[in-house]
Length: 427
Image (cartoon, rainbow, N blue to C red):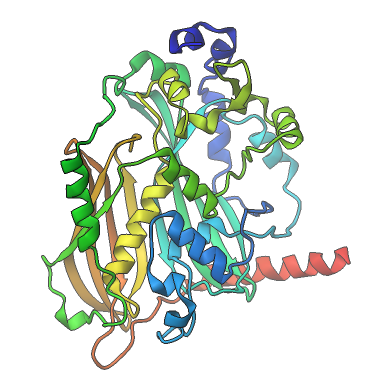
């Protein structure tokens, strides 16, 4: 079955028949401000030295602070710690009160069959994740905005806040996810990017990328002191790519999950198709397969308006953290990140990451450095822009994490207390 066959098929017509409605937008806005315990079970519930190493390797990060227990014991942390953004992929079910019926009604079939992709995020980091830490979370919708664009027509942009909490009821981080919902049929009609051709590489092209890899350095044990950093300083250069399906597979193998869609195998896939039939669309062999396959199936990606398969936005967000933590060194702490994903990263694309110091300041007892980062592909397009704040040590003192806002710490403690109370009742 060709791309044209897919577009003409009854299955495809059903798949693209879902539209963004005013009713859905109204319901989404009524959900703002409601937080609930996240009862999902991710692939990783408790961090271990193995899962931390595997996750780091899944994004190409070989920092010994994450990967080598013998090395990490000699750092200020006394142990391997997890890359900060790994917190998003660690989750044990948090028990909580039942969701009110009115909230369930608002969520039922909300934006059914509409294409969703991550367009950016913000992170605030408050403490590290150690082996043995179990993470829980509660989340809720913060904002909802309607926009029109050349590519996708009408779209809905939402921000969801996930608060990550460890087994000691300590807030580890806050993850705000920017999601864009678009209508599949609109993307096909517009086809803005469909003319982009797959990139090919000569041996000389690969050698030039390899030279960047060879020059990359982990700051590691030598501290990067606040005193030595000045506005305008370069953060160096990092390469990621050329992107392959193998990269996507390694990202999943490292621990990136599929919640809430949960693509599965065999009988579990059969059960999942009954749960969310709109998520399954027949492939060229007539087999129901997940709509999420646009990240590895070029024919399906083309059928919904893209020239080829592309990465997950969170892959590049983790590349960003790799870049920042390499520069900061063992004693530095990435305290905040904000990123915006501007372009797709298609199979075969190469990302070159560069950045610079934009300012430095002393605030609330912390020595903070502000930086700006950009990802540029081989076509010269800026695909990601980001800003971050990094706490660095001075010669006379250590860098510290920021304090958790009091109300947020209080709410986290209440959520965990309710979890343990309900856990005891189950026994």
